[in-house]
Length: 302
Image (cartoon, one colour):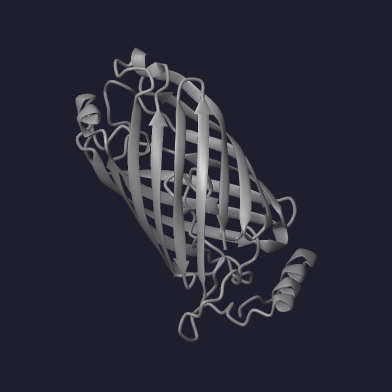
């Protein structure tokens, strides 16, 4: 273990908690074959499920691996999220599996309900855009929990394969394709002594509104580097508050796309369930101005 020089009370408490849990598998690298044990990580250090299914915040993937499995354990979670703005609703659900705190596999489905705005857009009231996402994330180096004696963050790279079922519609509004792939690199630093988590993600994408309006467009069909950031503060062992910001490309002439941000509170009474509530600002969506509202997400796992 590399938890050294942690003289603050909070860091000492974290050390004591790790010792009490008697988790010899908290080493950085697996020391043997994966065994069917679970839940060795500290509470809330696996993040929650972001909109595309990867472990992180609600909008942004983090470098952490989903579930509570450590270096020779498995971890997994399943989630459901509902977002409601003035004119639209988004339901997303999925699951992720973490292997040896090294690799994460995720799958999710997004269902975007245009509600009454669908008639205004010429699609019909209640028209839905459905999108499936398959993700793979690999931790490259660093350990967000153990590396408290260095400024080196945990770093991971990920891929998200997305397919929108409404191909004819998204192409009719100018999208180049109804399928696309996002590539991202995330760095996450957990400062136990300060009860603070910081994350930055660089994403290369063609997605319009996360892919719900297709990929690429008449303005641009090139990959764009987009920046995403998260900050979370642990009010207690069980509760975290924070905020996120996510930039997005602007590929479609018919509707400008704006950046998104949120403010959230997450409560995890134990390692098997967590609840996240947030206020989200999405900006303009498909010509409908200033979309903002609340979302709730429930995650279960181990």
